[in-house]
Amino acid sequence: MEKKKKGKGKYKREYLKITADTYSWFEKLFSREQKAAFLNDRNLFAIGAVFSGIACGRLIFRNTGSYIQIIDIFVHERFRHYGLGRGMLLFLLKYAYREKVPVIAYFSDEKEDGKVRRFFETDKLFSIKKTGGFYCRVSTKDIRVKELLDLNKRHSKDFSVHTFSSLSPETRKAFFEGRNAAGDYMAREVLTKRRLRRLCLYVAKGRKINAVAFASLRRDGNIELDYLWARKGASSSALFLLSEEIKRVLKPKKNFYIYIAAVSLATERIVDRLIPKREVLKYYYRAIFEKERVNAGIRASEKKNEN
Image (cartoon, rainbow, N blue to C red; front, side):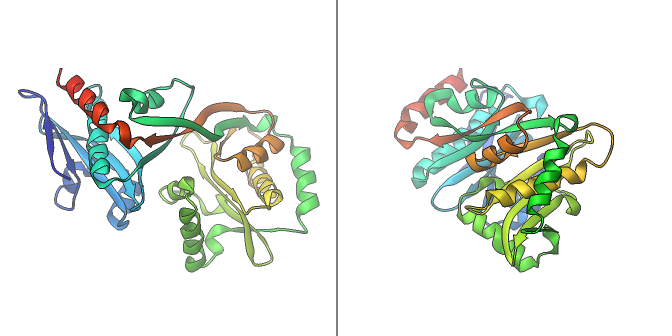
């Protein structure tokens, strides 16, 4: 991808592909987990934004060969509202258009007309569709402990719970490779986040992994359930595992929140059944780049940015 400069006078905007030679300019814009992923994953790439000579933005994306998935867009707060996020997005879309590869972005937003959705809707380059699931939180005081105990009593003979780290490295790798092949974008994000081993579990029936749940401690002291997966036809396993996860963190007497990402229709039904009383914070969406409208859209965006 070539460099692209915009703007007049001292306020020049420049967009470029981040390579081994230019990575040091943008290093501070990557989290520790993003650095490790970017430097070790051959399918992970990034675009950088430079404003008036200062590296201030980056867009991380994955190129599978059949499609491009936007992972994250970030612009330093001092340089926002200059169109740098839009500029990096257009830089990527031009590349995707030349390569004839579609672009997909999954995101969450608080409401139908949230700011992230508006970002992708501008210039009509993306078609946006609501996907199954939601992001919610529940207070531990609202969780029906008796039902959890009854559920575990009924299923404890059928399933056994173990820490995910107790699996061999080969088995863990095979699990994520299988989820990636199935297009499970949340499984990819799980790999970039640090979490406590005791909060990462799987449920087994015999030697087969039936369900997986990963959780982490938030900075505010609450618990985040980052990922919940169940094999087809094994929703009872996932329900059992989720109840085990909740049971583990209900031991303290102090009330706190459990944040849950129910990212599919299956996990949505599981959360519905176990936690009917909850506060929904965000819904999930999928944005898809429409190649047939790219020419008109890009020309309109460039003209707008020049003004």
